[in-house]
Amino acid sequence: MSLDLWLEADERLSRPTLIRLLNTLGASRVASETGVDQYAYPSGLSACPMENEGNPRIKAEDPRGLNFKVNSRCILRTDLASYDESVGDLKRLLFEIASQTGAYFVVSSQLESALYVHQGEGVEACK
Image (cartoon, rainbow, N blue to C red):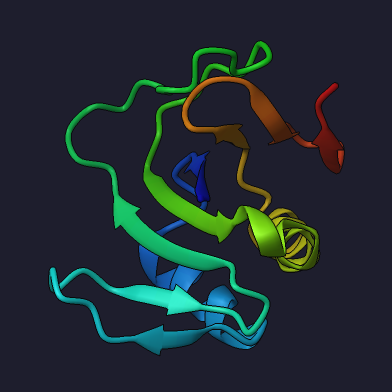
């Protein structure tokens, strides 16, 4: 069984910048049957970065008070069996996004509850 996490970020995080950060942090591009770029970490975490497709609204049901126009989205998928290993790669990616771009973002579990947010004061884990 897998878990989909959604990263939604403002205009400071472009798709090319996200791809550069994924590569810098050890993710490798993998072939996709659908033709969509996918990147995978050895931990089992995979990422599918996308540009915003017309709707700038945050889709997460609980964005923790954040209200920005979404520029990019990324589906981050992990197997529940390798979740603990994948979380390390996820956190490194989020801290790099925050420090390299300053982008505001929300990471939600399947577009429902927020897990992590960045709104200018470091990456916060949601409770």
